[in-house]
Length: 273
Image (cartoon, rainbow, N blue to C red):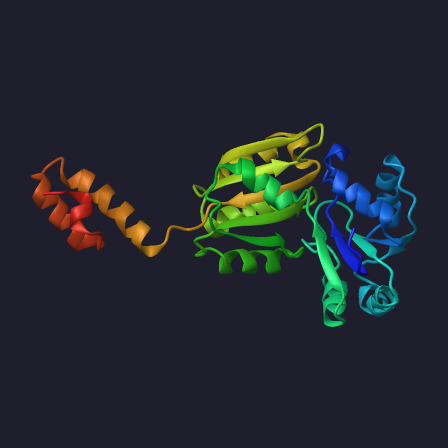
């Protein structure tokens, strides 16, 4: 624990309670109070570990009004913790207004790392993870969802979405329409829980699996979609496909020259001669 008043941003389990780290437990036991998105749900977690600190409800509807009162407690010398229902606070959860207000007041804000559904899912997806963009939940209305997805169709980074059981089928169908049925994707469901599943394939096959199995429409989802090929990669892929066809009928050097001229792919990448 810090000797100075601190707002601790504490990650909590996304399913398996054993994922609450020893450090997180120590911090939650030592603070004056814990700001929680849902005090009933967080109360159950804390009770499991025998943690009895007072809870303060902090959610989307009261965060703006309550933040200054919490900051006042911090300025008065108390250390407090911030948790969300599950996972890392502020990642598609309330809390950024409080963190911003605390930092503006000169309060120390310290992360207590732990579970995050987006990162956990990405770690097992087998999709490019050196560059990715987290999009959180898509708009609930179909028109807004489709508009957002079409705007992301050209994004070259891996796309990471959260989705609920109520909209998973519709969202996958809209992704097929926006990104194409053959775009590689991974669907992670109920991570760290009893019925955890991770499905991979292309978007069309994932949609078929979800439509065919009631169980695959239950729980909490992370949907990851491989990014679009950038211009150079797309040119090279097109050039290689054309070179393969032309080389069946033409000398390799001629096939490579024609394929390069027609697709813009570099000739040496198609044929080294």
